[in-house]
Amino acid sequence: MQNPIALIIVVISLFFTLFVAWYSRRWTRTTDEFFVAGGKISWVSNGLALIGDYLSAASFLGVAGAVAIFGIDRFWDGLGYFAGYMTVLFIIASALRNTGKFTVADVLMARFDWKYIRIVSAVTTLVICTFYLVPQIIGAGGLFHLLLGWDYMFTMVLVGSMMAIYVILGGMRGTTYNQIIQGVVLWSVMLFIFILVTVKYFDGNPLKIIHSAHSTIPPQVSQTVAAELLTGTSGGNSKEVIMSVNNLLVGKESALTPGVFSKSLPDQISFVLALLLGVAGLPHILTRLYTVPDATEAKKSLALTLAGLSIFYIATCFVGLAAMIVLYPDLLALLVQGKSGIATNMVVPLLSQMIGGEFLMGLAAAGAVAAMLSTAAGLMISATTCLAHDIYAKLLRPGASQAEQLRFAKAGAAVLSIIAIILSIVLKDQGISFLVAISFGIGASTFAPALILAIWWEKLTKEGVVVGMCTGLAVSILFTVAMFMKSKNIFGLPVLVNPAVYSVTAAFVVTVVVSKLTIDYGKVDKFMSLAHNPSVQSKISS
Image 1 (cartoon, rainbow, N blue to C red):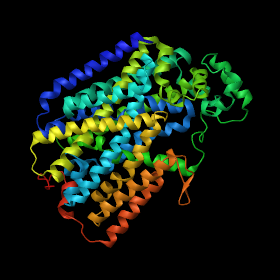
Image 2 (image 1 turned 180 degrees about the vertical axis):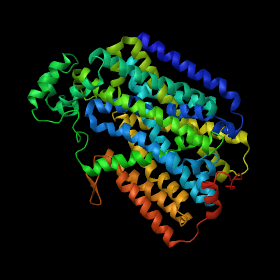
Image 3 (image 1 turned 30 degrees about the vertical axis):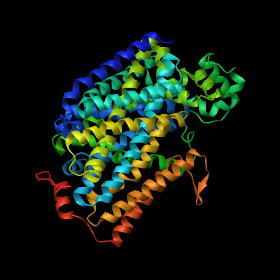
Image 4 (image 1 turned 90 degrees about the vertical axis):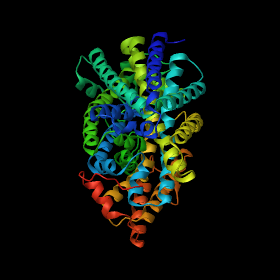
């Protein structure tokens, strides 16, 4: 056991969250309670739960880690995650809450009563949720590997199994309670790390972090000369190593120079587009809008979430830059050893250990595990709701009892966790923030165009929805696979760091063109009245 105090804190945190899930099992006897907590969560509770749901491994570990390796270039991650919520708040939140019940498919079915929309929506939900589960498992597995020294793959299997148990026990109400607690913990721990590292290493002045970063070459750039500075193990004085790197790489980009992650403008546009529209296509975030009584409460909860996220991501950027400066030799050593995944994903725990010992490392690790379990629970609730409600009850066995739907949902959670574990093992060396951005790209290419056009364009047709979503899903997956296979281009188009610029464009264009060629606009008048008029009380049956 390498870090017993930190491990104890993490274990206590895990047992507490499992207790909350177990305690909440009494409220999981109906589909309404299991899927959306009966729609009785207050806006304050839902806002805090959204923070816990959204601050995943990518936010808590991945953004700071990416900034520490690449510099300010990767602050786009945090900025994009934040800005994506603006899209949801101002464009689709009210309409979504007014027209849906359990899943995103319900919204589209409220306008177009066509089974193929439900099928495509269900497949898309499962793809997005599975892709998003992978970085949560990778991050949690890496943490347990760091704390215990256990085999990396074993820890990922352990974490994936825990996620399934967590959801099967507690449903949406247990998930909500845990997300509230975890959201507060995550937010507080990140802010505390920011304050402590600023006081300890930068005389309590955050501007000194910016000043130091301006004269620091990011590890991603300096690893080319790392062999001349390091022997393959971490150590050495950080300032001395930074100065040596600067002498060897005169004129290279600093941590505040854009373009280290990608010098290509199309790459940057694609990455930002995925983050900006991605939240509007994430099923586990959109589902939370159904847990409050009405659209007004949904918008108030989103406003609270935005306030919390703005502070969190600013702190995360500073923590990432500070970690680059303080942990510079360690990060270089990990990159030299080929451990880029650990170098990127474990920055926050390593920094916490350096500035606050095992106790702070334990808090950071507990916060990170909380982030992963919280997000994973939200993802699995969305996926299992889709399986039980959209596929089983609506397509495979219409008229299935609530008990049968719940059994199917819980079995689906177990199967989904197995698939996610396998993918996590395959992709274990990838940065978690990068993997989450891929999920955002898929969401931005499928649900986002369909929902935005369904809510705001009267001429949208059911054929346009299905063909557009299929196009966005196919193009995004095609370019994602090509990227992982390190292909340079497809059909003459360069493969970018995120597929969004191709897949989002294709989805919107195809949806509009097909809609222009077809005429079934669905129950457009009733849907638009329900979506944009809060006084309408009765819902359109799906």
